[in-house]
Image (cartoon, rainbow, N blue to C red; front, side, top):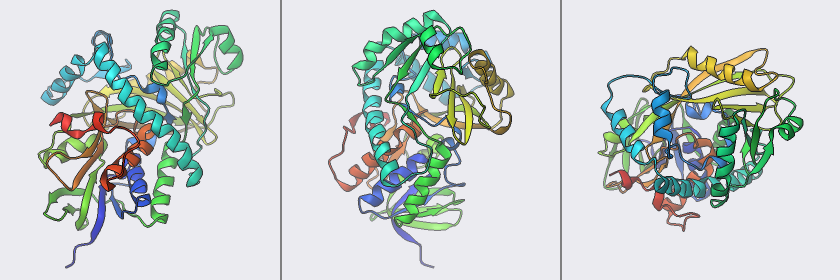
Length: 416
């Protein structure tokens, strides 16, 4: 029986895998995308859909360790570590803690900003060029505070953000309340990031899939890849639907990367950072901009089609249980800030895993020791925001073109 043979096999059909597929098709390569479930069913589905150059600063920052220790065993804290014996997690946490210093913070911020800024402009181009119907709006994002001290600390950081091309606008509490009637009284201040944007992530991924198919790409859903082997001329995959062969393979598996990479002798120090969201019918009085309620680390996104509360970071492995305590924390945080904190009907309660590396940078490039295997994974909380730049960078590297940005900070061999 003949084995189907393709040019590039992309393992993973989320935002990263599909954006890479589209960029490769535009570069003249053929692609087949293989996903274990339906496309976009993982972390690409239920996130808040914010496009955030503002999030260039990494999670690993000075002072984070002390804060994390205070939160560690608080079940509804923004950052929660489920107590358990997990040597890989504790090793990851130690390496993460070692990076909570100003020097590494600046290095990660610079590399993240380069990828985010490239992706931000590229996304607007893709939406226009491919007519992506995904409720994309370039309306900025607001950080909103009720705690004056926390507000002032973030205002003081605005100068540092400007070094990395991140523009900000600062509002006093009264001014912001007059501009944003959805807010309850008591706002200490707000910071707007006018370069940010938003979209509906599930629709964005569906639209990427549409364009990939229209341009000749093949997408196989419910086709779990069980094994990847390299040959002298390419790669061979064992899948739930039979064998597949190709010239190159791209691993775009997000939080599921480590176990798969291990079979190839590759190190991918990724921990699944579990996030939650609740999607409602749209309330009557909604914020004019996407926002992060910084005192409670709750993100609020409004679309014509709905209203979503999301965020939190939980390290509990690949546990898919919906933690009611953490879902309730989203609603409690929204109640402190908004006149109408949620809609009349709940459309979806969701959790998903962000692929978190300890240096807060993705793995982008050729897999060490494997000529025909490439990696596009580890984007943490920024997979949607970084998707277009990631796709273009991988396509440039695979086709020998001069990349639009320096690929060195993201090279997978930094973990080898």
